[in-house]
Length: 135
Image (cartoon, rainbow, N blue to C red; front, side, top):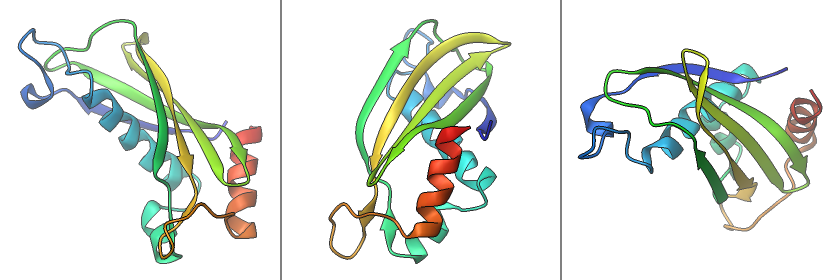
């Protein structure tokens, strides 16, 4: 299965007054893994932008099971779970020593950066997304 994986050590800046990772920061971690997923596919966000395309988030869902804390080393994983014409769903998990802390997904539109409208990607990119979603 094609996946993006990265490790991240939680800094103080990511935590709230209770010492837990602030809930919004988990979406930033999802983005870190999405970047690694694109790299694993051999195609970076930078290359997409050079080709005039963007992947704005149009929906996000996060399920918080256990908190991460300062200095925890977490593993963040992202996979493409579906691709349909102009939409892409990326599922993510954050674990500490194998224990599931957070799971969720982000839904993305494929956008033409010049017009700001959703668009079908070129055939090579569509094939790449479809193949990743099938694995």
